[in-house]
Image (cartoon, rainbow, N blue to C red; front, side, top):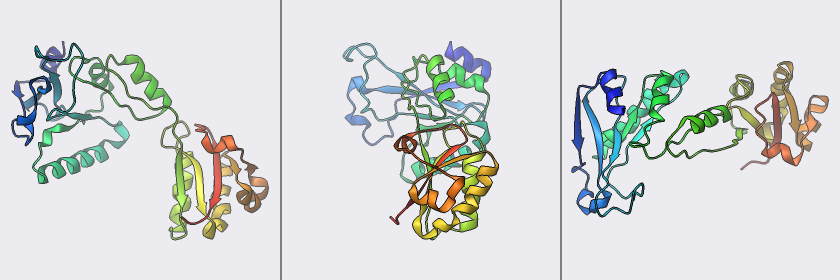
Amino acid sequence: MFLKLLDKLGRKKVVLDRGLSHPKFKEAKPWMNRYYVLWRYRPRWFPFNILIHEMLADDHGEGVHTHLCPYITIILRGGSESIFTNIVLAECIKNALLKNNRNVNVVQLIDNTDRDIVNELLKQNNYIDIVIPRGGKNLIKLVDDLSSIPVLKHLDGICHVFIDRDAAIEKAIAVSINSKTHRYGTCNTMETLLVDAEVASMLPSIAAPLVAKGVELRGCEKTCAILSQACNPASDEDWVTEYLAPILSVKVVSAC
């Protein structure tokens, strides 16, 4: 089914490669052997390799694989809003592999932002060992529901922004406001703001625009003393909570 999909997408030739160029390939035992499919002639937007396990007679049983093998291919796929950044990062990784005489094809990027490709990819449990999604709760649930491949997932995450005493104050203010108010329900939204005590006097400059945008501030004792009525006291639970809402915990900290 998957190869038929590739044909439909424009696959012209499939080359099987055992990875003999790897310096430790000869050390691999038979049951470690793995094949990867390399599209030598492929559409530019579909440039990734898929691992195929070769289950040999002396393997340890169906579905049991030892990952000491020479090649483990990683397929990267990011969101459409960061596609150009993803392309640059993938090129940086490939350049590093090339400089260290490693096979650059072990890291691949799907640079097509069509979600249907991801949905189909999540069904390829015969070719892909594990999926590691990174994102908000809705994305994690979606991947977990659709995938026929084992999923290594995270739950809540709490993003912190720390403003050091040597930070560019105007930029720190802009970053803090954007980090909280750009979108409230994403995994990269700031939930806790930490401010060096040496520059804590800047807090009103951050608090005013946040409050104007409807953000509730919950702070430590020092923060509440500086912001007065603009901030409510934070509880112990606030420091370990991913709000995904217009709520921000703020703490004044000593220099690291």
